[in-house]
Structures are given as structure tokens and as C-alpha cells.
Length: 412
Image 1: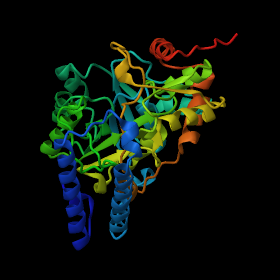
Image 2 (image 1 turned 90 degrees about the vertical axis):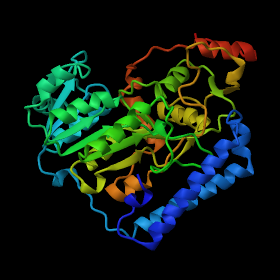
Image 3 (image 1 turned 30 degrees about the vertical axis):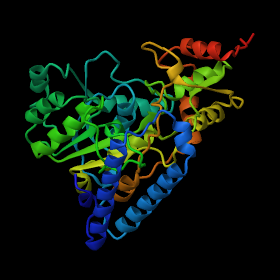
């Protein structure tokens, strides 16, 4: 996607922005060719080079913001969108739980397509009995397996769906049968991932940045390419790390388990690696704002939190959210251990964060949750109630602590 496609209504400044993006890509390729090491993230963060990178990223964001301010932006609020007949692939585990509720509340007819292994509706901690009853009486369900392409097509082809929200699609081959089954489709809205970006020294990642063809999220890249080739109006959302109540990925839950047990928190290397977390409810809001929004057709949007945070900062923020004492952080070098197939830390050991300016400018969207507020919401409505997706596993922690000669005091 050309950088200028995201900048509408201005000329010379757009050329300058394109030039800036091209220079950025050239620099990234140069850095890659020099095979810069990412293993020593603590030294990298402390270097003058990194400080310059952060300043450059800030300058790029400021330039893009100033440019887009000159653009006449069309946004579509959910309340202004005519009622749509929506098919949601997924919708019973995490993101879709919140998104489906917003869409139903806005008056849309929403049908969830799932295998039926999870109850179609479950009351969530933040809603009243009346709110849940209203939602569960309106949302619809089709039971099926999206891997059974012929069976799926037979179930959705004649239902008159206008919009598809694909929350759980991983491969392009899973998406093509849906498009073929709904020839009058008005928009395909896809949940991709910021994990598609090629690792770079220059951050934050913009939507125009180079992507990694070897990424484990390659299927999502292939899906974006398929949507473009099919000519159907489409929008792709690329979240970074998502957190919030019902999160089935052990992001905040990993920290909460250790804080509750009163254990030290193992952090790889310096703990100064910078990353970005976005609340699921902010993500759901962004998904609603692209619905039937011509500005968002054919566009990709990074969606996450407004601020970046270090690994150590996440641990301390989780402690504040749950009302725990300031945690003891233990630093270790992952290369000194063989953890087998187990993960010793829930986040990738690198700097990883994106710019969300495009979504803010195009969609009129901005995150409502700060990190501590969002983690507090997650704790109070999930882990703090005694609910979690995965039981605590401290086996890798024990390996680290034993090697470092640190004994854990077990609470009485």
C-alpha cells in the first residue's frame, strides 16, 4: 500500500511524506544488511543511536500528524451507520465478545459463526442482567467449521450478509470461500496482527513499513493480499499485544499469577525493552469505526495503546492494577537456559511498538484506557474474581531463580 494512499487531499506535503517513508525503508534495509544484533537489548536501548531513533520516530509522527490535519477526514460513527446484516467469524472468546455487543447495541443484526464448542453467549462481569438478556436475545448463531469450506458456504450463502468481521481467520485459504459465498459483500473487516512487520531498528512501525514474509503471521499477510486482489471493500486491523478481561493469551495474567503468589518476576535481559499494549475494548471500538466507512476501505490500521512501556514497567503497572506491593524483578539472559518448548516470558524479547496516528486521524478513534486503568479493569473483571484461562506454571521461573541462587519464600 502506498504511503500517499493514507494521505488524502494534499500534494507537496504528501510527496515529502512518501520521501520520508522511502528513506526510512532504505535505512531499515541498510541496518538489516549490516546484521545488527538484537540480543543485547539493554545496551541497544542505552545507546545514543536509540535515543536518535526515538527522536526520529517522534519527528515522523509529528510530520504525519501535521500533514493529516490538512485533510478532510470522513468518519462514520456507529450510530450513523444504517443497520447492517453482519456475519462474524468467531465471537465467543475475547475480541468478538466485546465487538458483538457493541454492534448489537448499535442496532445491527449480528450472527456468530463458530464450531459451537464454547457457549454462544455468556454473561460478562461488566454487564447487568438486563444488558445480557437483551444481547443474548438478539445475537444469532450458525454452527459450523470454517475448515469445511463447502459446508460453510452452504450455510452462509443465502443468508443475505452484507458485512463480514473475521476475528479468527489465520490463512487466506480460509477467507476465499467466504468471499465467494457472498458475492454482494459490502465490506470484509479482518483482524490481522502487528506481528507481520519486519524487525527494524527504526520504530514505531507504520502501516507502510516492510513486512516479514517469514513471519509466523504470514497467513494474515496473504489474507490482506487476497482481499486486495478480490476487489471487495476491505479493512485490516493490526493490533499489537491485546489485553483485558477474558484474554486467553497469558499477557497480564502471567504477571498477575506471580504477583498473587508473592514471587519475584523474571524479566529477560535489562527489562528496558519497549513494547505496547492495547485494551480489548479500545480495539472493539476501532473495529466498529471502520464499519461502512469509505475512508477505511482498502486500508490497514495499527491499533494499540497510546503510550509505550518497558517490560519492567508492565510488571509494575500490573502490581498497581491489582493492589500488590512493588514487585521484585529478577533479570536473566535467556541464552543461558534451555526451556524446551516452554516460554519463560509472555512477550517477544525485543523492542516492538507501532504508531496509531493513522487510525486516530482517519477514524476519529483514540484509546480510552491508559495502561494502569486498563490493567485495573482487567484485574477487577477477571483475574481478581478468581477467573483465568491458564493455571500458574512457575517451572521456568524456578529454573531461573535456582541458577541465580535466589530462594523463594513460600507464603504461609
